[in-house]
Image (cartoon, rainbow, N blue to C red; front, side, top):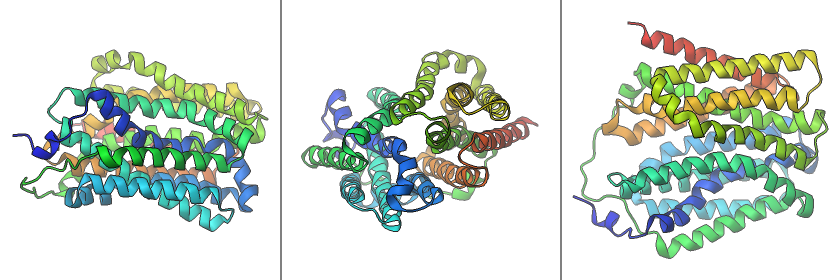
Length: 395
């Protein structure tokens, strides 16, 4: 029987997308719109590149880890409260970020911004599960959310470069604050509580999930894929603008081609994934990451940084990312339908922590002005995933 609270959600699919999509978009946009000004922020804040890297890494880590807090919290106090509270925190910290030039304050506010984004994102996806779990519209909404995650990295840096050029770096955070405030004001009268009531709580064994070889294999594959993109956008501003001499707009256009490569691959990945299966698609995705690392190594050793030696190899890695992430969720979660919420939270949390910790170490230890961090991360994580996959498949 449908829950009365879910039935109170009477929006059409277009109306629901206009209501929910901004929270999905803003969580990613807060990363991508900021990239063009990353090199300049060391001078603005009077700090080191390593501290600026924290403003990327902490955001990613908290965005993932927060799901373990806000998922259960939304089960306890409701989706609406978590969403509205998260949106308010995100909007407020965005405006405060535009007004500070203190490095410690800036890092702390980025952390709080990620807290708000994590809360709003979890509540949004929980609402989709509440309302559309047994309805065909759910597939449409999830697919469009995935398209947003590919679309934002393509256009976010371009928008950031144009805003920074004409209005300064503070305009980036004012824009985020204005967009979040608009989304919050739209949600206040139109977002009813959808948390199911009167449903018996299930006992969830986290240890059972963490003992699964399939869960770890596909979660590490997801970490390899998303972390490669994270290391790319962490190092790309320093390589392309700092060493290859790209302008902010030129960098943003070059960066967008990697996201475009992901979008193009997505167009035909469905049929190939169906042919290869879960394990075959993951293996091919990891092999493409390794091939991209080989091409990056050749470019690093043989010539100066350029579009051809840094961005074009990323196209290969981008194709690998698509083939991997097309199957990692199903592979990791297929045995845990009865406790899907906890499994999903662990899946995203582990991925975010691996990306933040291992990715940041690669950027800091292997010289973030070169291709070596991306080579190191893609090679290490793809190799580990392929090893786990071979071990998992072995009788």
